[in-house]
Length: 201
Image (cartoon, rainbow, N blue to C red; front, side, top):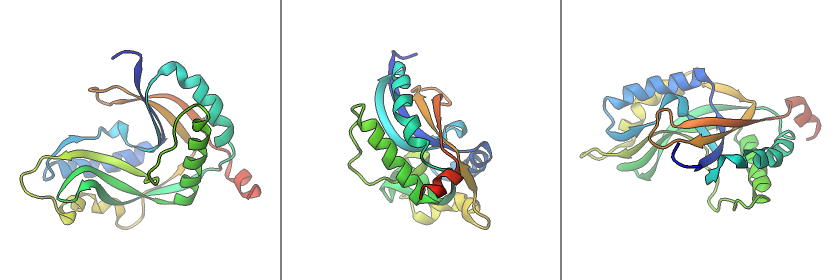
């Protein structure tokens, strides 16, 4: 343990089968894409709200705030979309897989979760919500990156039948810097049934 205050965040977990497919593509990417760090297979997720350094004892208050709100959201389906980057296109800071499927349901869930957490003092994010799965960080290559080169290993993930999964919960994770895997699951918040969501509009 590196003290009591470690970064906490709320996220959509990925099923093991989807994580495995992303990890296989990333393994192929490692051979030709010089990034400083590649995300551990167990750590793939879609962040909903980053909470920063917090004491783990906050988990109880987070549960009280989130469970009633998220229970009003039905389950929905997401799928992996084409990769992209944050930072300079020729020397990316982050390489990620995009998120497709019912993005409207995800955005509504994120907005309600953020509103609930604002009541606990967490400021809403000023930037537009951009869901993604981080695959690698910090380009270290001498040669400039190109979109074709970056996307090539991940073509199998988005060609043909999409990699879909049903979102059933959000998870509270704690970060352990320097460890592999880096994220520890602390709690989870189930979503309501799809039937309830349809009946309630």
